[in-house]
Length: 187
Image (cartoon, rainbow, N blue to C red; front, side, top):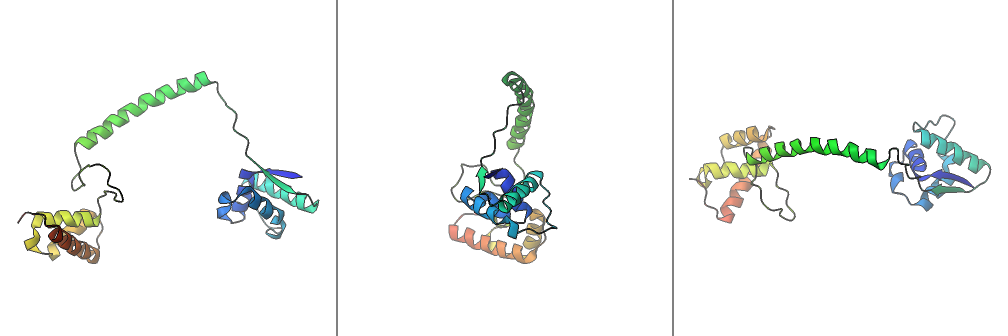
């Protein structure tokens, strides 16, 4: 019985153009490996070394009418004693601390036109989208101003990508949403 590791088998099939091989069960990989001779020809080249070795093993097993067994990958051996690993982690933590302080400093000063920080709302990710910016523009100009070409240009500038049709659509939806919600806006 020929044996190959799971990672080598997955590399083999990925080299043959089957990208979903990583999701296969052990049984399916073994069945596909038993028929790999029909998937290759003399000009087939597998770039991954493990995949190429698995191909050779599979072809030999098929030639000798042997079963192919897929085994789990061996766990990597520890390269350094635990004392050295602990020493290596301490400087990394020291480097990470100043980065966290920088992030806190940025949080103290909110960026222009970003949604306020609140608790996480289920089903909604607060981002600086075109509809969010459209709502801020409608709030600035008021419902009485309607939706104008100047507001469309302002939204395109704030969002950073010019798409007047999308901006007009977002502004109209924001106008109706704000009107329907009954929020008082600047007049």
